[in-house]
Image (tube, rainbow, N blue to C red; front, side, top):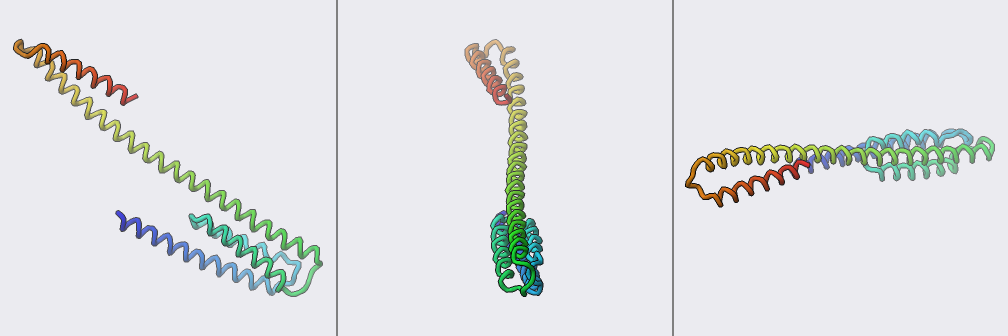
Length: 186
């Protein structure tokens, strides 16, 4: 069992490492293109693709780290890109790129949070199904036992030399068990 958990954890780690590589390679490619474009062109907006790639990971931190990296590359791209465009347009485009990057990152993290909550709810429902199935099985077994004890009681009544006090005690115990079983099913 622990081998399967370790194996699953290893697969997740490898998948996240591969996803990191894809995201960083994509961010580097976008950065290189951004450096070739003159200022004034919204070269930072394609970084949204990198943030969206993080949806493939369960780790919300990946989205946050990628948003920070993409934001830094957007700002660095502003300083290293060739001249061009009007200053107010350049600042507006870079600001809009940062806004889109962080809006996408926040929505992605919210999505992951909701997915995590949904997973926990599904897991709890499965656990409750197992619990109720176990409970029903237990009730069935105890009910069968009570029925068999009822047969023993009926046979004991037929024998006149059976102790009446013991029969009365036996009957009281069966009634108590029946009440407990009823409470259990409620």
